[in-house]
Image (cartoon, rainbow, N blue to C red):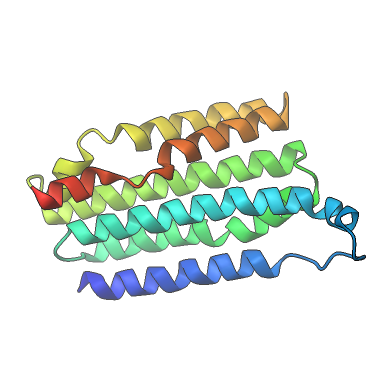
Length: 191
């Protein structure tokens, strides 16, 4: 299969995910800045999720750019990733509406963990089909960032029941680690 079709489909799903997240905002009651205060937890949850979805979109684009063809298992792996990302609006809304209480924050961490695992599976599927000497395989190497993320998430999920804000700090730390686009692939493509 042509990778452009998969990229276009994934772009469309991710655009819908972001649209759903923004449509979940309720209009404030009142015309003062004070009337925006109840929206703050929902807004902060939205910002974090927007950053995460943006990170996945950006790195997904780079991954697809590095491969020549897509296999059937890669299609399934991509759908697996999109499934977890499609749940982001629901969990984001639940977390924001409940002012970042323990269970919604823990579920958010589980969602991030599952999306991270799905991203790793997609990368490995693409590498397997494209070959161990491919640009993507060389760029991923040992894939320390993905593995580190997958290790940090369970620890932060556990922290949720001690203090949800500590867990959110862990989620933000992982986002900061990924906020700069994964330039390993770009570097390999230009060499």
